[in-house]
Length: 296
Image (cartoon, rainbow, N blue to C red; front, side, top):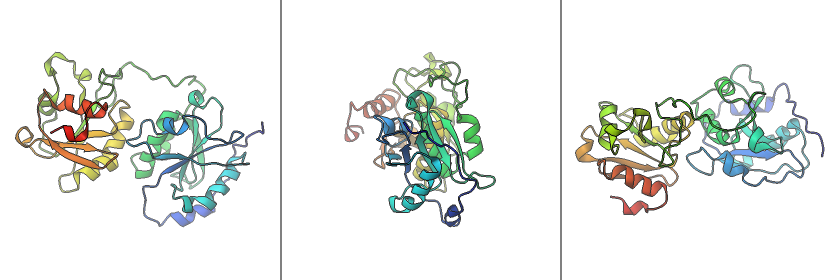
């Protein structure tokens, strides 16, 4: 097996052409520098594990390339045609990538405009790239929070404590938590009381319904949630349901209901607020037991 050269160039002058171009929500590429450079089984699925959709990260071949400098030169000649994000990409550099992680690379960091890299958990990689792309986090914050160190010998999740939204780090019985976003004027505690089955019999951290934030009422609510709020919330709480969430767009939601949103298919529908049906119906759809059109 050929040795892989993981050194980066000091600068990538070609990136100057992207500095004045408005941000576009392009997909991301993951490469394999290990011979024979084939797509490792399950790699793309693992990279997209935490993403709201399963098509954020795509595998691209790099035949005959065994260095990061060679891969960067290859990307510079193909990125525009393939419509991948030009700034960030992933690379497999270790046969045990499921445990050792993947390399995430930026061709321009936030400070000096130089290339940089770090190893990170593969299942976090796709969602981190999304948040870097839309500006929910910066490169140095990402590196500080997600870089693997010599002390990280597994990718096992900690189950102690709570996520930033107060939810327990223990996986809920439903398999996921349910995100609620709302317009100002909504009382988050009362909202959760109105939708959570058996609310009073559960500790706050064990409630499956989680309030994740207020949206700006004069902006498109769904675009705010799908484009910024939900990706960040899913990064903070890995057990949030990625594909579906609720938007409470009326202070009188008990009478008017609220919006159930489908991220992947860009659909939404108004559903009733009822602790006996809101969560069961959501779980039925998210778990594939009920069709979208079956829920009123």
